[in-house]
Amino acid sequence: MAFLPITKKDMKERGWDELDFVFISGEAYVDHPSFGHAIITRLLEKRGYRVGVIAEPRNNEDYKKLGIPKIAFLISSGVIDSMVNNYSVAKHKRKVDEYSPGGKTGLRMDRAVNVYVDKVKELMPNVPVIIGGIEASLRRFAHYDYWDDKVRKSILIDTNADLLIYGMGEKPFLDICTLLEKGVPINKIKNVRGTAYIADSINDEVKELASFEEVIKSKEKYAKSFMDEYKEQNKVLAQRHGNKYVIQNPAQNPMTEKEMDMIYSLPYERAYHPSYEKFGGVPSIREVEFSITSARGCFGACNFCAITFHQGRAIQSRSHKSIINEAKNFVYAENFKGYIHDVGGPTANFRQSSCDSMCGKRECLFPTKCKNLKVDHSDYLKLLKELREIPGIKKVFIRSGIRYDYLMYDKNDEFFNELCKHHVSGQLKVAPEHVVDYVLDKMGKPKNEVYEEFRNKFIEINKKINKEQYIVPYLISSHPGSDLKAAIKLAEYLRDIRHMPEQVQDFYPTPGTISTCMFYTGIDPRTMKKIYVPKTAEEKSMQRALLQYRKKENYYLVLKALKLAHREDLIGFDKKCLIKPKRNN
Image 1 (cartoon, rainbow, N blue to C red):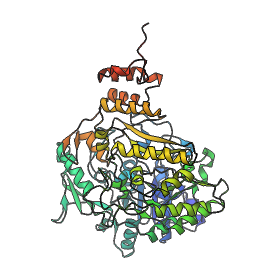
Image 2: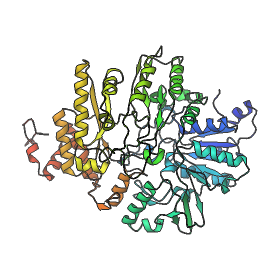
Image 3: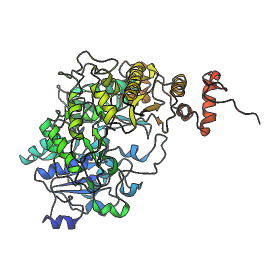
Image 4: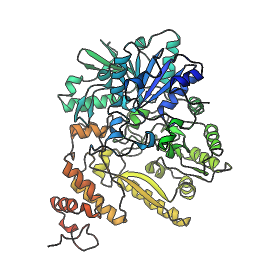
């Protein structure tokens, strides 16, 4: 099956003089199921619609090159928020865009969804516009914007789009198509789950959040409204902006195994568009080209992560047959070397729902394991064994992240042993994020003792199987709740385990997370109690430097941090010291 049209010439080759939908994407056109634009366009194609793709438009001619679509423009910034993609946490321009041809920056606009909708409305004002993807999904209500350092309006209000699809968009799109085929115009579609729209009024059955005008004046109301939005995904929610309302329908229902299999069986080219070859391709394909998505959703619910808010807590899995068929096709690829890079999802070892009820009353793993949590790796273990047995497959790695607390709650060590024996490429990346319990509490992570139990078990198993393998812990500096005392404690921990991270992630306040709400308000929205938030550039630099205290360029920042915290005992020549005293010239 060929790539979908990106030019009028492509349309003519298919015998098309008009398209039903034009998908405008903030990233290069990569026809692979790891990219939202690929899934949605192939799904619409399967439904019988004529679809074309405009990737990273820059001028008026780019927007008009496929003509006026018969039904609607579909707009997304891509699989990553455009502001996160374009700027570091220090708000510096990034030097590479992995999702653009040749890794070139500047092709994806800042606030891409807003820019694209504005331009479409200007050039083709009568064509309906549907927005979706991570950027639109997490900005569906009033939200704190780190780059503007203020609360911005719903992206629906900002863009005046006709409809917003939040979360993963396949089921809403199929429901929308059903209504379109019955003759319902897009501006009359108001009852599809997983969508939001603008209205002039609301009825009594809607749960109304604090208005935009209220949340910009009161951080307490912002925090309360945020948690209502976060927890009440199965209700119709509304938020007033001036004389208009943003109305959000309940979240889409989880996809069935059959539906998941169908999505991943669509005729993807599994490659970037050939027009990018002259630029050296699109870098982001390298990691996912021979990776397999086995499931979606996450009941881990880390406070700094928006996956739960976007994909939902319910785990949606593909069948073994579907996954194995995908893996078998890898063997015939010219550049396949026998290594499957990953088999997973948001959390690799989540292959089934956390329990039978998905009550929503508490977190499944935090602060401790829910008594109803089902811990079982047998299905995932069976799947990995089946993949390893396929002729032509040398190794099957797991790189999308193991939830170590869930693993430790499994009293059967079979999966842990198999993981170490077959699925680690010398280093296993996991995400303890911190070691100080009062910081871990704000992160929504288990106590440090759980990670230590996991770490010791990993060392023990590798010793038994005579393998030299290491854990690479992901760590976050300057998360809400973390003070200099906690940052120094983390530095001491790294000293004790003799690990110096090559990279450190400073907390990045992105839309849609509890941690970002904490960062903006200084309030833990779960308890409505005030918390400490490191905000100044200097303190954030000190906390980050402490995690790489051996680097020469960090010396003076570490020195200052230790003095401010009255931890001069860590300045000296003893083994417990982080740095040596400053030399007198």
